[in-house]
Length: 408
Image (cartoon, rainbow, N blue to C red; front, side):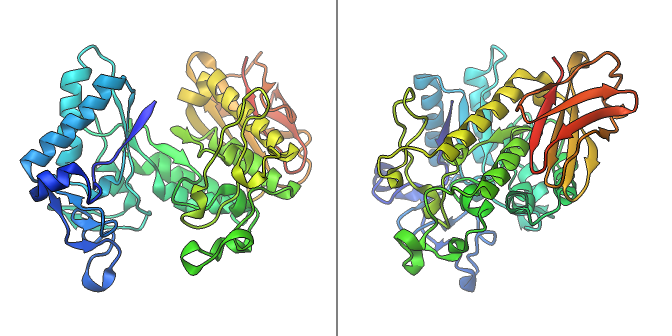
C-alpha cells in the first residue's frame, strides 16, 4: 500500500500558506511558454494552477515540515511507501534528504520503504537544472533514483513510445520490442521502474484500442455526454486488442501498473474524462460497477476481460521467472512476438502475442533460456499450448490470441 505524496504544491487555503507564506512561490503558471514558463523550462517554481502555490524546498522550514509530514504517514498508518508526485517539479533535496530521514527512522531493521516517483517526461525531453544537464528523458528519470533516492519511477518514455501503438495495433510488434529494449538498456541497473499503458493523465486504453474518434473531443472545448467516449465497448476486435495488451503489461520487466477500471475496459477520453469515478459494488455479485452503466452492471465482455486480467496477474504471481527473471527476446515480427524469462532454479516462462494467422507448430528458438531437456510448459491463460522439442519450443496459438506458458 503506497500513499500519494504531494511535495510540489498545496491549495491556497492550506494552513501552511496562511502561517508560512515564505515557504511558497507564486511566480507563473506551468505551461505558459510565451513568458518562458513551460513545464520543462521552470519546473521548480512554476504553479500547476494559480490556486496551487509552489513549495520552495530551498527554505529550511518548508523542507523540515514536509519531510516530517511524510514520516508521520509512515509512522501512523504503517504504509509501505509513497508514490511521490511531480518529482521533476521539486528540488532534488526533497528526494535525497527525505530518503535519508526515512532510512534513519524506518529502515534500520533492513526493510526498505518503497518510494516511487512521477517524472513526466518523454524520451526527447531535455534540460539543464542546478548545474546538471539531462540529455533525454531516460537520464532525467535516472537522476532521482538509486540507493539514496527513489527505488524507481513511472517509465513515461517507454509508455509514450509504445503504448498507443500496442493498444490500437498500429505499431508492429517488432517495433514494440525495440522500444522495450530501450527501457532495458537506457536506465541504470537495479531501479524498479513501473511499466504502464495509461494512468490519470492519459486516455483510457479501451478508447485507444477502439481508435475512438471522440478522443480528440476535450472537456475544455465543451464536449459532454455522447460527444465523449462511451463507458465500454462491445466490439470483439477491441476486446482482443485489450487482451493482448494486458498480457504484455502483466509480463513486462519491472513493476506493472494497472489503472483502476482498465481491467474491465472502461472508456474515457482526454483529461479529465479519463478520471471518471469508479464505483465498487458487492464483490459477490459483480467485480465493478460504473455510474454510466445505469445500475445494470458490467457486460459479459467486461466480465470476460476482468477474468483475463485476473489470469494474467495470477500467472505473474505464480512464476518467479516472470517476476524476477531475465527477459530474453525470442521472436520479433510485425504480427508475432515471443519473449521468455529465465528465472532462478531453472525456472522459465514464455510469452507469445499473435496478431496474425494460425501459429500451429511454430517453433521458437529457445537456446537462450538454457537447457530445457525434460521440461514442460503449462498454459496460464488457456488459449494455446506449448511443448519442448529438440529444436526449441513449439507453440500452438490461434489468430489474434495471446498466452503465457510457464514451467511448473
